[in-house]
Length: 475
Ligand SMILES: Nc1ncnc2c1ncn2[C@@H]1O[C@H](COP(=O)(O)OP(=O)(O)OP(=O)(O)O)[C@@H](O)[C@H]1O
Ligand SMILES: [Mg+2]
Image (cartoon, rainbow, N blue to C red):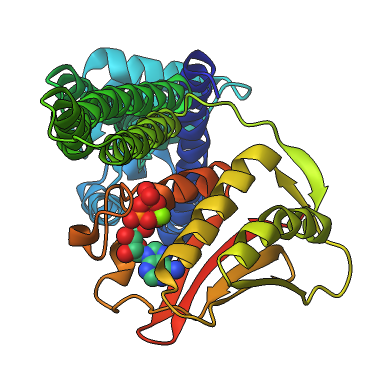
């Protein structure tokens, strides 16, 4: 997902989550409050209020039939005060709107308000006095002398805690905490998905700029950051490849210079020696002269072949030679090969045969000319190193489920086990003192087979013979 989209989504999610969780918390709070306090508190309060109302009504009922003068009796007032105080209520006796007795002191305005509110049947029987809510009960008396007497009974109604305020504070607090937490989470996710990978990317880029291309860049982070990692890693691989290629070019150049100076020196020196022998008159007879010239010529041919091999190997090593792959039938290709070399082998008193163990025709994708060079080099070796009178070389064709296997087997002197892993290396020769070739034949064969995405390896037993194995993908 793109970063901008992700950023908005995550922020929206944080807000929605905060709102959702707050709503949930409020629901739980309300449910818990109702369960723990609500009902019980309400029942108790209701019960108490009911008892107070009942007691006040009782007092009212008892006071109603009395004469006003009886209310002025101190004994009655004492008894009234006891009952009223037990209910945590108040009683006021008024005559002519003047307080004649009160269990509690109220100011004039409060008393007037209570009288006014209780006068009218329609108005509420509740009044707020000195910050408390009271329920008013009133008994009126007719006094012969004029203005009426009144008994006011005021029972306090307990004020409920403001649940809504608590709920409000709770809601705001929960929202703030949840919002902060979700924001922290969003920031953490962002830092993990973007900022941390970018820091690591920066460190990797610094390393690359310092020339250290060895460490790979892991693909991590989100969206564009991930793409950036991938691009940078591709860049690192390309850079590493080009550095490797440059190194290879340098190595190759050094190799050519050193091998030319080393391996070509011997034959060139001997050519020079024979020619000087002729010039200096060492070869006195025409026969001797012919022999010198012939030797110099064969050495020159050898130098030429070596230079050809060197150039071919160098070009193959730098992937400078294009391949022309053709789909070919394996058996008929090797029949041609054997036919090409048969005469040469017969002349050398060696037998060369093809053994086809394929169940059905097998097709391979090969560069016919280059593969010929591989077979030529292997057969040349077999011919050179067989060193037996009854030299026998067999080309055996086999197949596996996915590959064609070509085995070129001789019954020659074989290769010691410790030397076997090196025979495909350039210039490697098991017996360097013999100086038959340049040691490039099998190295060239390996390059070409690898150019076909195939494999080449060898098996050998000293005194028994050598097998060079090639596997090519079936087509
Ligand atoms: N069929 C074989 N039997 C015994 N030894 C072998 C055989 N094929 C290769 N070798 C050994 O492996 C070495 C490397 O072979 P390679 O063909 O690369 O070089 P070379 O034959 O010495 O020189 P070049 O082929 O360049 O003329 C040889 O020097 C030889 O000692
Ligand atoms: Mg060879």
